[in-house]
Image 1: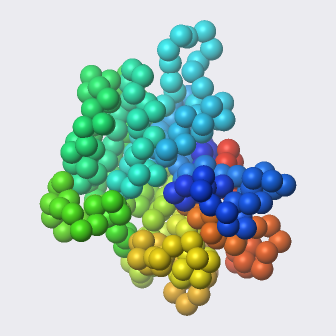
Image 2 (image 1 turned 45 degrees about the vertical axis):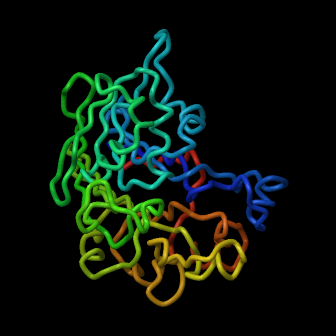
Length: 309
C-alpha cells in the first residue's frame, strides 16, 4: 500500500506569505487559521517506515515537526525515516529545504542532471556532505526504484516525464549551469506501488494540458496537479505582481484551457490541487471559486492530509 502525506499545499511563500496583506493572508493570520499552509511537498512510503520526499520546500523543518511519520525513531539519538528526496525542478520552493537536511543523516537525492547542475553550481549546497547525501541523476521516461538506506529496493517505482513549464525563475536571462534547451527543468512523476500496481501522479508545475498528458494521466488512482492561480492574470488584477500564471509556467484552475476544463471527465480516482498561491480565491471556503472547484470534483488539501492507495 502506498501512503502519501501532503506536507504542504501552498505555492512559493506559503499562506500567509510573510509580506502579503491580500485577503487570504489577512484571514490566515487572524480568524481563519485553517487557511495556513506551507510550501508544496509530499512524502510517500510503501512500507510506512521509510519515506521519500517529493521536493524539499523551504518549510521542511516545520513540516517534519508537524508530521509524526517523519519523526526520529524513539530511543535513537540520531535517526530519520526520510530515505530520499526526489526533485521535480530547481525552483527555490523545491530545493531550499535541502539546506535543513545538512545535519549528517544519510539520504539519497534524485534529480535530473539539469537540476543537479544548479545545485552543484551553488556552493551553499556543499553543506550536503557527499558521504551522507548521494546524488543520483534521473532521466526523462526512464523509471527507477529509489533504494532504502540498506540498499534494498523500496517497492516504489518512479517514472519522471517532461511537462510544459519553465526553468527556475532566478535563471531567467542567465546561462543555465547545464546548458542545453531546458528539457528536464520541469518534471512530472508517476509513482507506482510495485506490489499492488496502483499509482498516482505528481505535477506541481504545468503550463498547459496536452492530449499526450491527458492520455498519460488517465487511469490513475490519484492526481496532484498544479493549482497555483485561479485565473491567469490573478496577480496583476489584485495588484500583487506583474506576471501572469503562464509567465511563471503555471496553468490556471479556471477558464478556457484551464486545469478544471482541460481535465474534466478524465478517468482519475481523486484529483487534488497543490502548489496553490496565496492570491488564489479558491482557498476561501464558501467562495464561488471554491464551490466551482468542489463541484468539478477537485480537492484542496490541508497540510498533514494522508491518502492511502
